[in-house]
Image 1 (cartoon, helix red, strand yellow):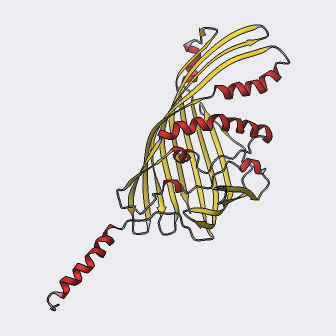
Image 2 (cartoon, helix red, strand yellow; image 1 turned 90 degrees about the vertical axis):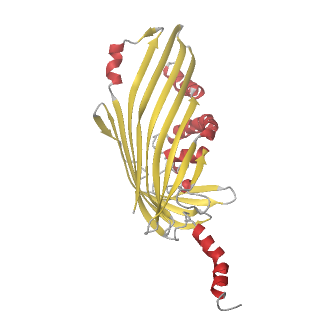
Image 3 (tube, helix red, strand yellow; image 1 turned 45 degrees about the vertical axis):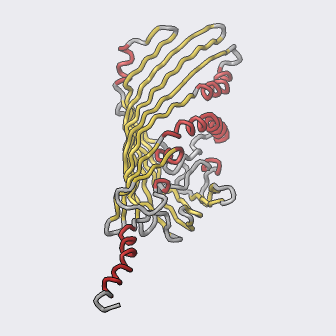
Length: 348
């Protein structure tokens, strides 16, 4: 090979490597260093309005003037949660052991401008441990420290970094992918649900199990077609990346069996043995449309921030045929709500 041809030969050898290097993307993934602790604050604000309301009892509609004040009333809710997550051990793109200490909880509800604050949640001051059980493929959730009942923490969710929104592989700016089903539904309940708010935990637990058995299968079926579109917006010089999300979907739930079960277990006791028979149907239809963004620290391997806003429409339809003590009554109700929900999470 002549000296004149050697640079060309070297360039030809190097070109596949350069081409491959040019195609490399970013790899947003969950990989925080063991022992890392971050403080998180999550806020949720909701504003709901009654757009339409129709009530009738024994075939007679409630007069419009009676409903006027209700239609002008807005329900506004603000919930703020503060917590510290310690990533004790991570692997395979998930926390293997995580300790979550609940530092703050406040909830304010306002109806017609009159605000009312809730009592502090008794989970505040407690630390919950999430340990991945590879054999069962689920988390063992236990109370590490604090005075709450462990039955109340079983529906908490370890993922407050929105790991389910991350791409499966390396991505370049502009890449898109989809998240669907129950994973997509996690957007609306970050951190899961704490079930220890009822004084009678055993009764609340029984109701929760009943609701879970009746409603979760319906939700799983309905959410099969619910899709969140994710778009990778690239990484900045500090290693922070952003994933934008967008979604639109519908969900329909039949609550008839649940309502009948609740009435059968409670109202009969209040009637003091009087004859009681009822046939009730109740359905709720939801339409939701929203968008948001997850900011991710590619170097540290955990979330930096999250924000999301959506518009929601809820249609409730109910009918009841009730017979009590020999008297029969019928009732019908149709209520349409609309409103906005906003989520915001910061990480320090």
